[in-house]
Length: 251
Image (cartoon, rainbow, N blue to C red; front, side, top):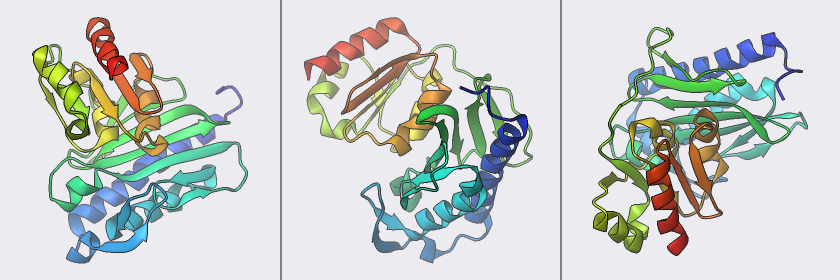
C-alpha cells in the first residue's frame, strides 16, 4: 500500500499535519476570543451545530493539507478533487468540552489511500502532544511546544475504562457495575480511542463517524478491535475484550 508513495510525500505530509496542529494550538492559547465560543447557526456535515472555533480549526487544516488529497472533514464534508488520497479530519474533537472549558479536546487526522487508512494523527490540544502512526512505522509522539519527539508513556496497570456516551446505555452500564468495572465518559472520542493503552478498554456506542475513529484505529491497529454499525470496542487485554464484546452482543 505504501510502496508507491514517495519519501518526500510522507515527510511533507507528517510535517504539514504537525504544523497545522501547532498553528491551532497557538491560536487557542494566544488569540482566542469570546466570539470563538459562539455558535454559527451552521450545521456541519457531521450533524452538529458548528462553533466558530470549529470552522477556524477546519480552515487551518484545509490550508495545510488540501494539496495532499481530497478533504473529508466534519464541518464541510467532502471536498473532492478526485485524488487517490483522502484526508479524514475532525478539526476539533470534543467541541462541547471546549465550549464548557473542560480541558479534554483535540484533533484527529487520518490519511487514506483508495479508502484504506495509511496514517493517523490524534492531538491533545491541552497537553500539546501529537500521537501518530504513519506509513506502517511505529507509534510516535511529538510535542507542539518544541516540535521534539517525546518518549511514549504507557500505564502498566490500568484501573479504569472509557465508555463514551454511556449515559444512553443504562443496561450496559449496569453490566459493567455488576462486574466491578470502573469507567468514565470523557467526551472526546478520538482522544479516548487514541489513549486506549492507558485503559482496560475504550467503548463507544451510537452513531459512529469516520471523523471520530479512523485515525485512532490506525494508530492502535495492533490491538483487539470489535466494530459494528453502532458500537466500537478496543482493548489491549484479550480477556476483558472478550467479556465486553459479549455484553455488547447481548444489547
